[in-house]
Length: 188
Image (tube, rainbow, N blue to C red; front, top):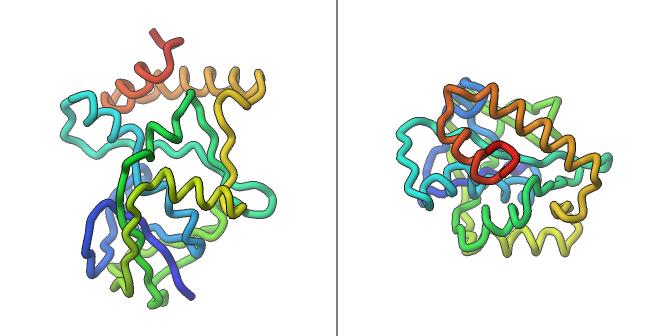
């Protein structure tokens, strides 16, 4: 089995567990290459850095995606042009690993695997523009994108309620609150 991992770091020989939103050091993989494209950029980190928001902690992750009944990744834009703003011009790397004996499948995310141990990489693929790579996967039917303007009124209401709740719950994450306040005008 081949597993894929995305990173902005070049020439990684061993993928090592890192702390993410779940506060547990893990390496995340997917058995589908297209599913790791979303990890080439983090909209919160990108927005904060582009706007000179000084933050030294671990950036919260922003991942408005899910999977349809066939297991195809579905990315939803929670604000206009989110996909373009997050991924256009962002480059990165997709690593493959074949030594998967120390990985375990996640039950709640299709095609996802984790490892608590470091894993040797087999190969590296350079992605020049993550947005173009995602668009290509969309054309191939491997990813579905729901544009903000195409979402239903009920979905827009759900987004507003969810964002308001997340804003209240993230007092310990100034970078996340800065991002939310700037992307969702109803928070002002």
